[in-house]
Length: 576
Image (cartoon, rainbow, N blue to C red):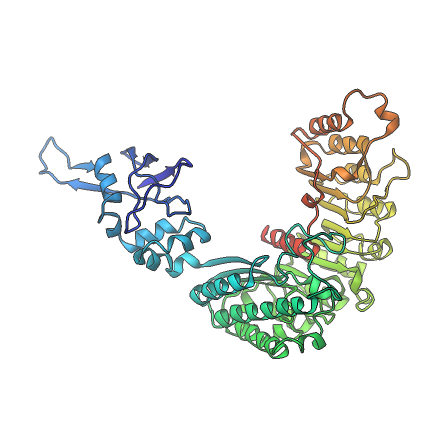
């Protein structure tokens, strides 16, 4: 077999014929034959459709055989297409268009989804091949941050074309245009891009339009996928935290939207139909999708999918628990689970520790301090529950994200037997104390690999008792497996940052500290020549064994918390 790799320069796209075939260019093609023969040919430049540039990478193997009569001293010979013949076959008015549809589909399978859509406008033949179901088994879409009038029709087109047979669907919806971008934050972000709030001109209509667009997009998605029996992975995320903060998710506000309550019920019904029609669902993740998941949604999961489901994530801003013990008992093959920390009751933890179940490998927990008044921590998993769970699931690893959680509450949930691997502490107002960091570094010194300490406020408190006793340095020293450390919103003294880099060395694969958080000791600066920041960069780079720089823009380390949790738990669970 011949394996061909195309190398193309970023030159301007060649002209395109009426049938969508590019003229011959100067791209290099190396054909490597396994076995007795090896041939190298020069092929045409990859076909490019203005204005998009893309490569057609494929196994194009053209040869012809010339049979000769066998004699005693002769063998049957094989003649390879010459360079000119190959160029003519690919670029001729008939040659490329005469390729089998199966081969064209295989060529297009190497293109990104966006380029597939753009290439489909070249000609009817390409359009027919590009909409072949085998090319659209995975759909990864993010809708939001742009014009609703443009994005909703695009979503409808994609779902109508591919929703009924796609095997994987990953969708992120951002109802409020331009507000919940990946680098935006909550109340502390401020700025000109922030939408109008209550009492500002146009606020009421803006929120109504945002919710109406969100409901229409949800209806579009579930109308298309509800009868899909091939669906194996469904991952949904809604950037709806601002709507929750503004109190726009209650029934009184939904009544003001045209058929809002009716659409919510229809969406819930379609979601239940999807679960009941599924036959091989392996991954189900619904995070902060307004009005989608109800406490009885899991009851509609079909028996075949209940046996194949390996990952389950149900998170919502509403207060009612979304996972009941009776429904979780049906899902006996779960290997990964994500839920609200308050929903991990002692009964639920005991069920997960049952010997009749597949051992749990990943557990992601979201601890929201704003919800603790309504959903208190009483009744959650105890130290004995964690011990029993770890005995049955020896490879269990836990990821916890705490939002606006006071240190006293944090100390209550961090049990010694909890196999904590990743910890993300995110807040606007609450502070993490040095006592909490001391506990973390002592209890999880053998398991902790990721630690994120973020606070989005104007002041930067100092965690150390004095400049030479920093709990972050002790954490870096004790936690021998620590590989990711992110800090913003707390004072980090420059010499302590150098100490962290020297303690962890190259094993600390990711170190992100905002420049705003770094402070220089004036007593030590008097004995150091040159720019203190440049000297710090040099020392930390030497300690890590690679080039390092502080984050000059705080948005590089800050992200919207719920969105970050959703994406991190995906990576955490996929790591299985």
